[in-house]
Length: 167
Image (tube, rainbow, N blue to C red):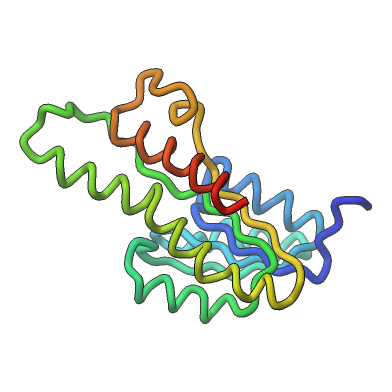
C-alpha cells in the first residue's frame, strides 16, 4: 500500500473529535502507532482504535503550556509524524473589553503552540531522515475571513505562512 504507516509513530494534537478523530482512525487503519492529545485525554478515541486492533495512547493537557508540551513529547517518544489540528475559533465581538485576552489565547493555541511543537520534533525527524508535519489551517486564513473573527483569521493566516517557511 502506497500510504502504509506501519512502524511510524504519529502525534495528533486535537484528536478528541471531528477532523482529529477521523484523522486518527485513518492513520490507525494505515498502521501508525498513535499518540492522541486533546485538552482532556481522548480516551474514547484511543479505546476504539485499540479495540479495532490498532495502537494508540491518549494524553490530555494544555498544549500552550511549555511544560505540558515537554511532557507530551517525552511520553510520545521519537515521532515520525506530527498532525496539529487543535484550534480556537471564538464567536465574540472584537470590541469587547476582554478581547485582547481572547486574542492572546487564540494566537497561543492556533499559532504559537504548533510552532513550538514543530520546532521540538523537527530535529529528531531530521536525524532519522524521515518526518512529516501537518499543521491544519483554514480557508478563513487564506481569504481573510468568512464569518470568523479577526483573531482566528490572523492566526490561521500566520499558520499558512509558517508552513511555507518550514517547507
